[in-house]
Structures are given as C-alpha cells and as structure tokens.
Amino acid sequence: MEDFDSLVSTTWLAEHLEERDLRVLDVRGYVKKTDLGDGRQRAEYLPAHEEYEEAHIPGSLYVDWTADITDPDDPVPVQIAPPERFADLMSSLGVGEDTRVVACDHTGGQFATRLWWALVYYGHDAVAVLDGGWRKWVSEGRPVTGEVPRVEPARFVPRPRPEWRRSAEEVLEASRGGRAVILDARDEGQYTGAVRRGRRGGHIPGARNLHSESLFDPGSGTFLSQEELRERVRRAGVPEEKDAEVVAYCNGGVAATVPLFVLHRLGYRNLSNYDGSWNEWGEREDLPAEP
Image (tube, rainbow, N blue to C red; front, side):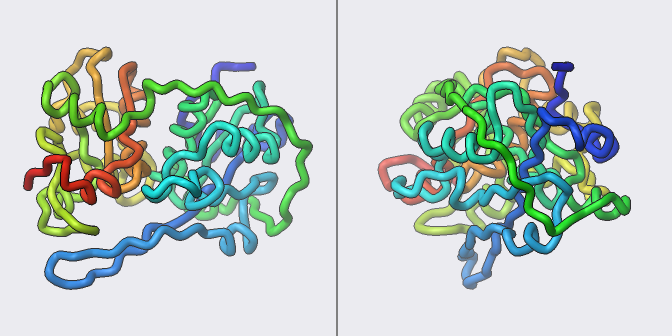
C-alpha cells in the first residue's frame, strides 16, 4: 500500500475511486442552530441521509454522525461509540485492516475530521479527509449516483488509543497545571459566554480560542495552506515544539477534531480530543468556567 496522505484532493479521489482497497464514507450532516434570545442558543444534531440517497460519490457508503459512530448509552450527546459498536459498523461497511478510507462531508469539514479522529482513535491510520468535500466534487462536474453499493463485510479490529481522548477530570488537571495548550474550537461568542447553549456559558479556564471554521478558505471550502495554518495555530498559542501537548474541545467533540486534524498534518504528536466538551463541562457545576 502506498503512503496515504491524510488530506486528499478531488482529483486524487477521481483517479483512485475504482481501487478495491479504497472505501469512501459519506458523513454529511448538520448542526442546526436556533437563536432563543438573551444570548441563548439551541443546537440540533442532524444527519443528511436523504441527501446521500438522492446523490453521492459513486461507491460511497453513508455514515450517520449522530447515531452510527456514537454511544447511545452515554448521557452526553454524540460521544464516540464503544469499541464493539464501532467495529461492527466499520466491518459492515467493508472497512478492514488494509482498507484505505476517505471521509467526505459537505466541505471536508468537522464531520469528516470527526470520522478521521474516530478511526485514528481506534487504531486505523489509513484514513483521509476529502479536501473541499461533496460541494467541491459536484462543482467540478464529477460523477454522482443514487445507487447504494453492496460491499462485502470485512473484519475491523478496534485498537483504542486512550491518549487521543480526554475525560473532564483529565482536562481539569491540565487546566489547573497549565501543562497543556487547551484549544476551544467554538466561535468567539460561545467562547466568551455572550452566546450559550445549556446551563452555562464561557470556556474552560486557560483555554485559547481557535474557531474551527477559521481554518478553511471561505471561498473554496478547502483547508488553508500549510503556511497559513501554521500562523493561525501560532496565534492561538500553540508552541512550535511538535511534542507540545494540545487538547481540543468544542460542544460535542466534533468541531474540535478540525484543529486536531490540522495540527496532526503540521507534525504535532501529542494531541487529544475532550470528547465530552461543553455539552458535559457546561452542565457540570463542579467544573470551573470563565468568560
């Protein structure tokens, strides 16, 4: 198997689409935000399965980010599925030990990087994000279909890497000790507490704000250049040392995977996702918050 870059272009995918060891997973979805007034906001997590059924990249299979790769028994929304559940899904999608996976959402954004993180967390490194995603693919006039492919099941063996996922207690220790850079991937309004979801607003003490959407080109939807990304993470307080510890969070551990993906591509090695994020932290009065 050739070296597999974690970010692939639409051109690359078009050239490799027919290869038997390649599986495209369509993880399109939405976070629908509703303004409730007085700085309050409600978020609804939605899949885009109907869009997939209408048209998708030939050979791709759909993954519902709200249900398929989450833990239905966890009281915190959209937490990563336990090993057996995740393995059963990947096996049914034909993802095995030697399968290369390309994750595709509307733009190559937070849902694609969430699936990238989930696979890496479970020990599968041959996974990439489609830069620009579905919208770029369609804008270039590339082929689409409504036909759902039939694939042979494979055997996916989960090998969890606990260092890639942090608990609230571990993040609290990192916040108090100052040993790690904590990145808040939400927008500035949520970071400052001007906008809040749930019980409390604000952010984890000591956290720096690096909005996930600031890492994409607003025109094309593709990631910014490596040089621009380096500048953005430096301004957010991430040091140059590639072994620096960085913990990212957002509301549900999804947008947080965007800066983690960027840092991974920049060569950082000590990265983790606070999966519970503000959906957990903001509801727990025993955990400190600051504006």
